[in-house]
Length: 209
Image 1 (cartoon, rainbow, N blue to C red):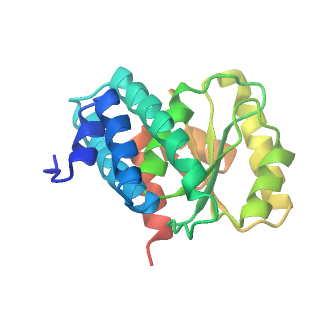
Image 2: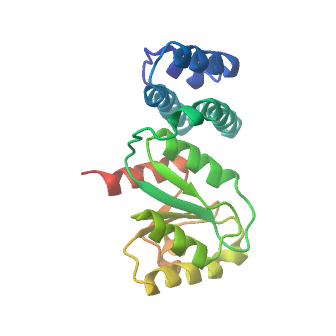
């Protein structure tokens, strides 16, 4: 685990919701750049992801961290409008058509944002054309697809075929409770992720320069 020297990064890593919001507001009021504050929050979220991977944090902690981050961003977003926001790259993600489960996807979204990526979250029950539109609109080199229901596996395969047929040069990573190498091979995805931390590692491998 990392040693966090910033008070705000430490507060979100320790899931101290009221302290996080107080610090965000105090720093804004004192003239700290909202982008710098986002960076501090991301440091703390990265630590949460590491604790989850190490088994010291569980799903409940990840969900709570996501809620704290959401509340903090509600304060920051009006100040970020028009700011020169730099991110590591854009990633489109969604739960495939026919599936309405989003807990796993939401955790992946949270960790990817914490790692500095611009995440376009399409939500649940997402058809192929919506993935294609988002990939084109954002020039995203990576798309993530979440699935929980085995009955939606054929649908996922079809969506990936649609993306390929559209001529989009984007990588596809899939994730879900039953997803493994054989599923990845069947649906013709580029990668599969066992957990949210794996998804971040895959993204890091693609976006590294």
